Image (tube, rainbow, N blue to C red; front, side, top):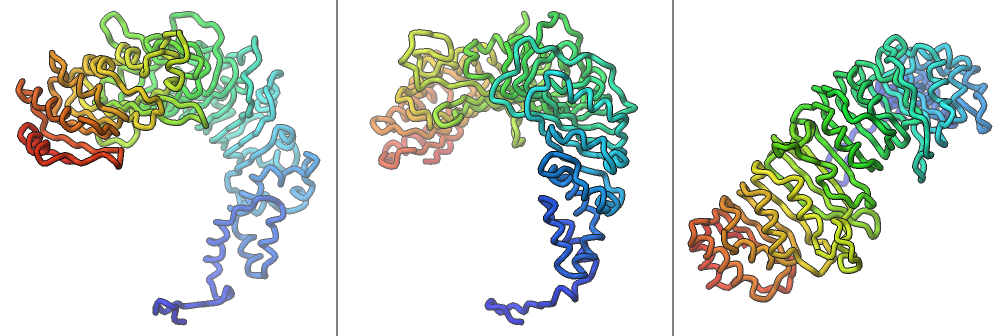
Length: 505
């Protein structure tokens, strides 16, 4: 048959398709419930193909509404219909709700627990009575289990005074293949923190930091460690180092923790310099960054930060929306050529309220950019050669002042490249022509701003003053974010090209 494009298209009926192709097509069907058995009722060939597709039946059993009926009781059809036989010994992927946990102890599932590879349980509330831990341990050995996830969603934090999970030795005999463990702190059993674990994610709840770190010493292969909105119980100050040579991700997301928790994690964990570290500070944590990221007497950061910061050379500031009204400031340290930052820190950004309070803490300062001084104190470095600042979407009408730019230049004296996207660059130009001139190694400058009046002349004068002191730029990139701004005049362009090797406008 000829198509409208003139290309000949071969058409054939489903009866002419090879049986193996039908089976391959059936592998892409994702059943969403018991009613999807209807795919086997299309025709005799489809029925035979579906029955020969073990992946279809494995995915069917993975649906929480297949193993149980609408009342939450074990579904009799599962026992009467050969679901498990049709999976042909494939590893099982099971998803259950809290009320359905007991189905794991019923026939025929209990006879196939040795094939259970992925178990996901959606709990409805906090596990105050350790029900999950007791039930999991009562299942006995799960020789094929690779992924275990048990979490609940709660708008409120864990109850005060919650006991932390009892510390038990890792049970390799019960979980010889477990690689991925994701649980709320209420559900954490240290018997599951086995030596071959590669991913550990701990969600909302109370934990003993000392006991978690003690357990991690038995996990030398760990690649991803994440704490999500956890609370800590008091712990001794001195905790021995934890060496995780294969760690790729360290994530303290939505961390409802005091600075000592973050500090202890970063100080205790020894990781390779290629580890990607991500830390989020919540809006009510209006503390100086040096409280979270202290330096020692020699000026060095704690272990995990030091390993990462010693390898990076680029830093980015960026304001982003967080919800409808809130904003957050992201700091991202990276290595040139890598897409993902080695270190990312986010914090609340309160400049919408910059003139509403007399409190001069970093979160509620009357200064328009309250975190600059705190950032400089905590993260000043002579290894950062590229700085990018993207504050163009900040709604505050006040621009970064000369003093903020000067503070940054003093904190990062080795800057070679500076890229800015701001509403006004007047403060930047004042800082660049202030004596003593800084930064002294600057070679590449890129500016995007919305200024109109006298900007072009101010830029020319600034770069001429620096060039007169031997501080010539190799590259200048300039663009207006304001469409109404006029372009550079020929006279200004000629003067720029006299002091800058490459000018792009």
